Image (cartoon, rainbow, N blue to C red; front, side, top):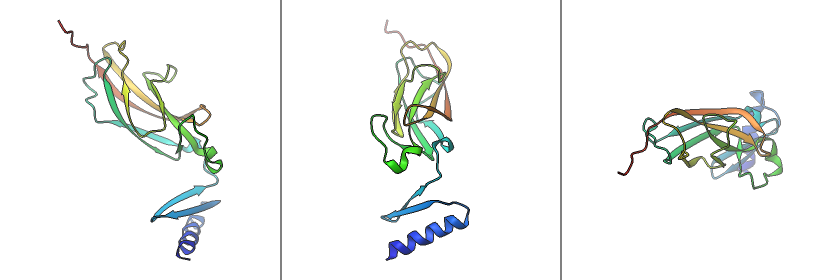
Length: 155
């Protein structure tokens, strides 16, 4: 009964704020809101790194933390639940341009990306884009600047 009252109160508050077509599931004091009008085109993404981005060498692994909103993250090889198809997606990580081949495709929010060994010294950027589950690109992108320095030779 308590769950029913909480669900009803939560959806009533959302309805008063202009959100319609809502259902809410309460599990372990966590609300999972299903907005039937949601669309992955509303997604946003931010990337950060704990690595020294001013001193990256070709072939180095860089750790990224990704924060996304309004997207149900799912690996491209998996099938999203029917109520999440419109918001299902994953991340594609690129170096310098989203028209290049992706360095990594994942639904994980904590990842390690290897900077290609052929990357020239200088200023570059890592780009993270949210793609729909079917692989279609969205406008949700975030970039992180980095400076690649010449690798130290062993001689």
